[in-house]
Structures are given as C-alpha cells and as structure tokens.
Length: 120
Image 1 (tube, one colour):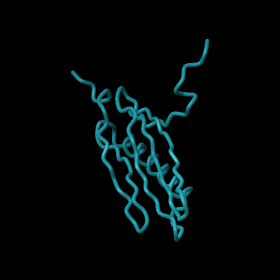
Image 2 (cartoon, helix red, strand yellow):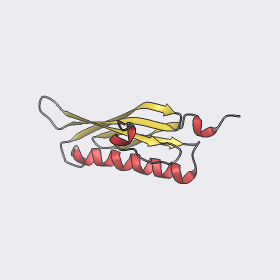
Image 3 (tube, rainbow, N blue to C red):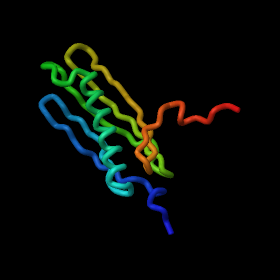
Image 4 (cartoon, rainbow, N blue to C red):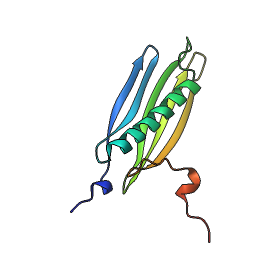
C-alpha cells in the first residue's frame, strides 16, 4: 500500500493580480493534514508578501512580477524558490530569489544547517 506522505504534494498556482503587480503564489493542496496544509500555505504566502514589500510593493512607479519553481516534491520534502522581479524605470530591474524547504509531513520550514549532516 502506498503511503500518501511519500507522494508529491499537489501544488496549484494562485495569483495576486493588481495594478502593476502580477505574482504567482504556490498553493499546497492535499496529501497533508489540514493544519499542515494551512501552515505550509501561510508560510509561503508570508514569504511572498515579504519579497513584494522588499521590492517596493505599493510604490507608485514599481511593477512587480513574481514566479515560483518547484525544486523537490517527494519523500516528505517540499522545496521551492520564489522569484520577485521589480522594475521602476531606468535601464534594469532587480530580481530577488528566496528558497524554502519544508518537511511536507509536519510543515516545518528547514533552516540551512538543518539540511546538512554534521561532521563527526
């Protein structure tokens, strides 16, 4: 019998579409407990909004484009990157990218040191 926790999570693309703002937000659906799903989605949404604010969301001349990419979605690990591009005139815009890696069974957001085994 297949353990649902070992299967990939269903990821949908939500959208924040406002004037000068076109941001796709990953949304976790299914295969986790409701509380874990809520925790994962809340953390992802908080990170997206933090990137938007850092890039100047709400400023008159700022245009934002946000996307995401799945890096790993198996064996109880969900890893993705959030990318936020900002353009407010001039020659070039600015891109920020933020990586998130979760235990998809519990919703725990790993820190970088937690992803590596300590040397013995």
